[in-house]
Length: 328
Image (cartoon, rainbow, N blue to C red):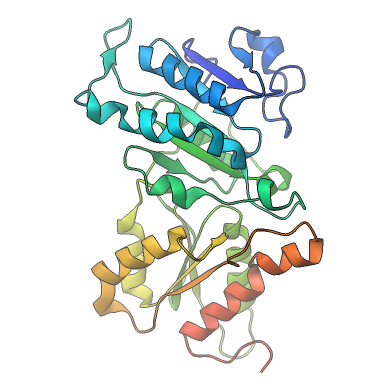
């Protein structure tokens, strides 16, 4: 993005020489300089205000790195009340850039979220449902390095504000092929990662990997194996309803998996969509596998108990197809 568009800048805490806490910006300062890789004060409110103001001019396309996504709370006024509303309040055409292109609010706010690293309650939350509830924001949650690169390029080139949520565990995935050069993964297009016939399993971010493990275990059962179709929505908004509804119409069952607490979670939104638009195809109640409704503890065993995994997802799939569990 920095190479292809001179308007793009990166802003955040410790993103320069340090390369960011998770090394996502390592080497960028040496290539692009401090004017385009901007070290900010330790003030999320300041970062958010500067980025939204810069994007509003149409002369700058900021990529904001929130060091830990929980700290986005400190820039929520700029994100929710300014960036998300900008396009509507100015009639859909906020201003034009130097080349005459219509510009609205070209800004990406990205950062790590999620648990599993013993960072305790204030540094381990999954906050995607907050953002999907705000009209005007697009919300992206990649699950693979390939998708992360392509989705990020698409997000940077989108004229609307995009929240780009990266689970901390994804930084530790085994190396996989990521094409060189420029490519985009379009926003609003889901990915079917495994085809199946018995149950549709929609999972987000790190839960995609747990879902694939669960699907593998279920397919390998010697007696009464279960064929699971695994879908990664990739963007929570805009949502690729068509892909999910088509799958549910074929399997007649749906399980949703996300790490965020069930209460108020994004899974409830997807459940309502499928219930309204594919009810006549369902042969079982829709099931949500989600995190416990509590702040994530620092203790490793307690934290693990609060985050769902492949075992819970597999049992939920067995329940909707009414087959015995692994302990029977």
